[in-house]
Amino acid sequence: MCSCRTPWAVTMEPEVTVLVPRLLQPLVGGCGNLQLDVGEGASVQELLDAIALEFPVFDRRLRDETGTLRRYVNIYVDGDDVRRGAGLQSKVVAGQELMIIQSVAGG
Image (cartoon, rainbow, N blue to C red; front, top):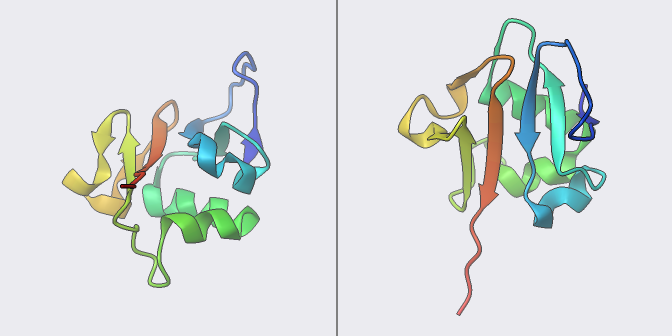
């Protein structure tokens, strides 16, 4: 389901690339990106659910106990913020890129 691929790996599968921020990569086996098979398409929520099956601690860093995206986490599908669209119900199709950005705060 979730697999780490090298950037030069060529595949004909209907996949979405999930870009993982460096600080969260240890929670997904050190991968900088994950490849997920989406068939005819899936929602962002379905993709996060699929990742959560394999990497539950990673999921807890992105979503709270109700499944809502944490306020300091932003997700973009091909550069579009999902919060400005359909949220976690935003559709993702093969060939698209889902980028996860975790805000960093400090003082």
